[in-house]
Length: 239
Image 1 (cartoon, rainbow, N blue to C red):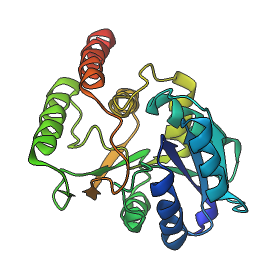
Image 2 (tube, rainbow, N blue to C red):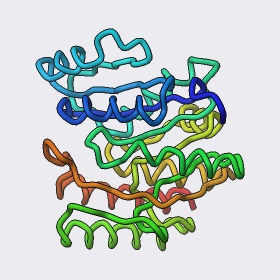
Image 3 (tube, one colour):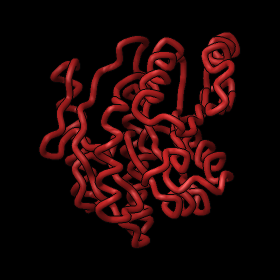
């Protein structure tokens, strides 16, 4: 992977204007010439601010949806735009809240240069990974969810809910053609499960996950509960 022009970066966003401006600058530093696709579910007023940030940046596409439609559907829409460009061979997915650090792009790229994986997940729980600036209660909850997903979905990965990922063109294309059913953050687990069940190769690299600097999390208890119900049904349905 010598030419960054064959890399697209899909960034789902919801009320993240303050973080986006910082993130874009960091991406330009660590992965110049890559193509950014921001899928923005923010309100009209917030979306206008996002448009100002990307003004005159030819490598950035902003998809303005103007209402919250879920991370899963945002990623799918971003993939579709990325894959329309025949030069795109790899697609990064990352959060817009600065939880994921662009300086770690090289870990994913090094991994996919060793073996042509279809999905490389940035893991907080793989040896060498860590979580910073977050309460112990949030960390415990995240670990419990991932332990459950590990035993229930039975894929040998440590972080099912990490949104920092690198997909091959084939892997992203498969997801588009087969359409994920979930809308929120649990789409991350559904995608990994779909790829695994259909013989696509998956790996992980350790990352440092930073709690957001600005804004607040969009995940609530209601979404957590409905997500767990969905993933239980997902495994039963696949049987």
